[in-house]
Every structure is written in structure tokens, then in C-alpha cells.
Amino acid sequence: MDDRLNILRYSAIFRGLTDDEMEVLIPHIRQEKVLAGEVVFQQGEPRQRLMVIKSGAIQVSERSGGQERVLVTYHAGHCLGEAALLDDTPHSTTGRAVVDSVLLTLNRDTFLRLMETNPRLAARVLAQVAREIFLRLKHDRNAGELLNSRTGSTRLERDLLGEMEVPADAYYGIQTLRAVENFDITGIPLSHFPHFVRALALVKKAAALANLRLGLLDAEVAEAIIQACDEIADGHLHSQFVVDMIQGGAGTSTNMNANEVIANRALEILGKPLGSYRFVHPNDHVNKSQSTNDVYPTAVRLALYLKHGDLVEAMRTTVATLRHKAEEYADVLKMGRTQLQDAVPMTVGQEFGSWANTIEEDIQRIEEDVRRCLESTLGGTAIGTGIATDERYAGEALKALQEVTGLPFRLAPDLVEASSDVGDMLLVSASLRRVAVKISKICNDLRLLSSGPRCGLAEIRLPPMQPGSSIMPGKVNPVIPEVVNQVAFQVIGNDLTVTLAAEAGQLQLNVMEPVMVFNLFQSMDMLTKAFQTLWSRCLAGIEVDVERCRNYVHNSIGLVTALLPVLGYSAASEVAKEALETGRSVADVALEKGLLSQDQLRQLMDPWAMTRPARMAPSQG
Image (cartoon, rainbow, N blue to C red; front, side, top):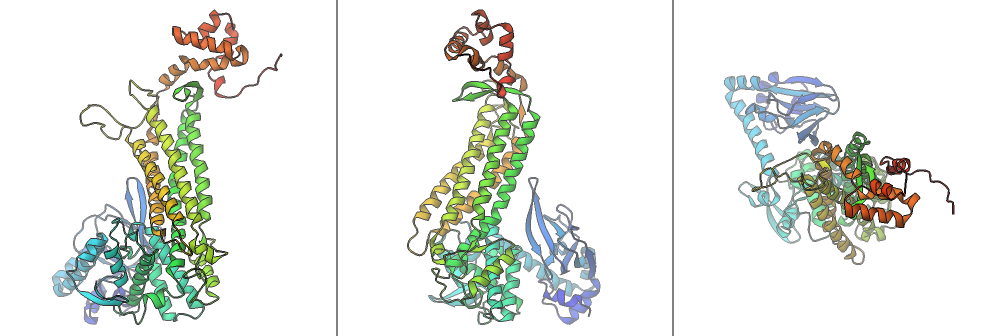
């Protein structure tokens, strides 16, 4: 047989077929080349073929709400589109070649003909397809459902406390199982934060590389661990990270969940049964030269760095949207207000521009603070003293971490101090709180400026997103700014939790890091979605009532401020008081009192001149 055989046998769909069955199947398999960037299947189009990657990589993404999100990257041996053999329902995702790739494909029509000529072989293939789909659906459910549904076969695993039955097809093991049973707290598993799972895999890969290069880990075992880490970093097996985000043990359950999944995938790569830890052990091999107390904090900080890019992108898009509105309405006059009272004129462009600038400042602050997180404590192990590691390991692990992440990680100068220090996470949390406070203030402004439509300020019109009342017909509420306000309140509360947890550290470790991590990740995710929602569903569609803004300016008592340089405060105050009491304009009152000439008034009361500084005449004493 040709070189297609080994690839097909590695894949989940064809792994169990005999040589005779493969000989029948091979002629129906086509080999196709796809170029980097080429789409191999499109979301919404009917499924037409099963694909096995012979070489290269295919990135799968999902488009929803105008946003495209990368889900997973598949490599050699992985199957895609296997459901095409069952029916031709549309793809729910899009697949695109990351690099030039070669696919082995089995078209749906070809398979249907094979069903007629060789129904037994077709049935065997369909059974594997159904099994793979079942496993994916099963693992997509939440951790409690997954672990409590023990209707299938199990394997027996042992640890310090005794024995437990683990689902036979699970990549996690006994220590993960105990953690799930102990910590049914939030219902939000590690898999909810894919950047965190990816960060754990990258840290474990760096550790394996360091151990391999120092001769501390067998090459075959190390390579299997590294491949397993690569697959997890690319998005595979995330459903197996089932431990609750908030847990006792300072993150030990998280570390062991990663160790067990990586160990079992490495065993599978080596052709060994899941759970046969004498070949690849979660502690002895995957966790070699490590402790939860250096792995977990390093992975958390890497995850914060990886996650912050999504937030910054959403904030930058918001800034760009506000700047566009500032340019669109740069020449529209409006009344500025302080303490909800008329102040002095400004332009709508100045107002939108000020919002853009305040968010831009926060982007710089977040990027500065997140860069402080690029500090590795690998090699410190339990409390920073480096017990149970080679003296060369910390330096080698740092180089490997820099290599696998492409980031300028540095080694903490004092590993004992760094083992209990969470100051950098406090800074990030404070930055997120600052962002929340400032974007909430902007949303307060949006709600106030759009109040009405007839009995409020009504200077701007927000795009109507949904009916606003179950009893008041025609009412439309500012729901997008409202939801962003609520996100801000949650983020501010999360920061308090982070602060209290940071203070709760004792001696050489802060065991409260899991709740800090959960709140930091939640804040970052919520703010990212809030900014995306705000710019796309509110800011981009804002309209300004130009005439209403102009009328507010011309009828405002605030224009009297322009008379100060000539009349002085007391005389200007008298003009303002009389204008307010009589309902007349400031200009009419000043002219009637003979305080200013018509030409002086025209120059001083020019609203456009009031939106910027002017050169003053020298004092005459």
C-alpha cells in the first residue's frame, strides 16, 4: 500500500480497520493539495467529504455576531468533516489551511456507493464516526454531567487516598476526579478559559524541553509529552480540563488536571492504553522538576498576557469608532455641562474625541501592567528554594519558555519572594477596574445624552436594539450602555475580591490564587465582550440631533461666561441672573444695559470662539 496507509491508521476513524479492509478503502481515498490561506470547508455550506490531514495544518474558526473566533488547529493524522458520511447538513465552522497542506479525502457520494458494494466495511467506518461524534458531544457537556454519567466502561486508578473508577475514555485521571467531586463551586471549569488551558500546555512543554535537554527525561517520553502539549495548545482536549476554577490547594488540582491529560495523551501517542502510567506518569514525567507552586503562577501570568490581546483589540476598535464619530460631528456645536447644569459651548466632536482619548490611555496602562506578568518562577518548585530540581533547570526552563511562547519572559530575581508575591496581578486587576470605571462613566453619558426622546436631553439617538417595555408601547431603552454599566460593576467587585485574596497570603505561598485567577479572567473576558458589544451595537450607529444641540447652545445662560474678560464676574453674573428671570437671551440683556456694543457682542458671543482658547488683550490695570 502507498504512504496514505500510515496516516489513515493513525486517524480515529480508520484506526481499527484490518489490512484487508484498508486495501478495499484506499482506492476511494483522494489526495488533495491546499495552499496556505485556502478555505477547505465553509461555514453554512453542505458537508461533502471526510478529510484526514496528511501534512500541514488546518485552522477551524466560527463566525458569530460579525466576529470570527478561532476554535482549534488540526495537524497530521487528525480528521475533519467526518459527519459528512452521515448526512450533508451544513458545516457549523470554517476550515482554512494555515500552511501548504495535503489532505486525504473521502467524498460523501463515493462513500454512499461503497455502502452498496461493501456494506460491512461502510458500517465499520460509520460506527467509528458515530463514536467520535458521541465523544465530542459528551465532552462538550459540563464537568459534573460528564463525570457523573458513568454508563460506559471505566478504568481503575490509584492514588495516595485509595482507588477510584475513572471513565475509560477520559484523558483526566483520579486526582482530577477527586477535585471535581470536592469543588463543585462555580460550575465553570478550566476549559471555560481556553487561553489558560493553552498557557498550561505551553508551560508543561517548556518544562519537558528543559528536562529533555538536561538529560533528565527519556527522549521518547519527552517527545510524546511535547506533542501532547502542542495539541492542547492548538485547541485539542480542552473539554478534558474539567476542574472548577475555584478550588482549594492553591491550584494543585489544576496542575494535576493538566498533568493527567498530557500523560494520557502521551500514552496514546506511544500506543499505550490510557491510565498505564508506568510508561508516562503524570507526576514523575509530566510534572518532573516542577511544583504546582511554580507551574500554576507562571501559567496564570502567561494566560493573562495571551488574553489581554483580545481586550486591547476590542478597546482599539472602540477608540476607532469614537474617532470616526468625532470626525463626523466635528462641526456640530453643543452645550457642555458641569454638575448637570449648562456650562460653556463645545463641539460634539470634542466630546466623542475625549471619550476616545480616555480609552486610549487605558490601553497603554493595561499593556504596561500585563508586561510585568512576563516573569517565570519555573525552577522554584515548592517555595522558591528549587528543591528536587537540577541546578541548571531554572535557566533552561526559562529559555524553553521564551522559545515556545515567543515572549520575553524573565526569571524572577528572588524565587522565594516570587512564590508568594502577587503584586503584578494586583496591578492588572487595578487596571481592569480603571477601565471599568471609565467606560461606565462614558455609558452614563450616553444614557443621559440620549434621554427622551421628547422629555429629556435627546442630543443623540442610540440605535434601537429591542422594545423597551412590556406595557409601554413605543418605548426603547438604552440597553447596550446599561449592560456595559453592569459589566463594570461586576469588574469593580472582582477587583475587591482580588485585593482581599492577595492580602490573605501567608508565609511562602498565597493559597487564594485560584479565586484571584477566576476573577481576573472573568473581568478580562467580560470587558472584552462589553467593548465589542458597545462599539458594534451602539457607538457605530449613534446619530446626533444637530438642530437640538444648536438650540440648546443659543438659548443657554452658559454663554455669559464669554463676557467675563470684558465685564468681569459681577457684571456678568447680573446679566445671567436677569436673563434667567426674564427668559431673554444673554446678548439682549447685555445690549439693553449698554454694557457692550453690537460688534463686541458678535465677537464675544460667537459660540465657535468659545470652543477654543483665544488671545486676550493686555490688562489695563
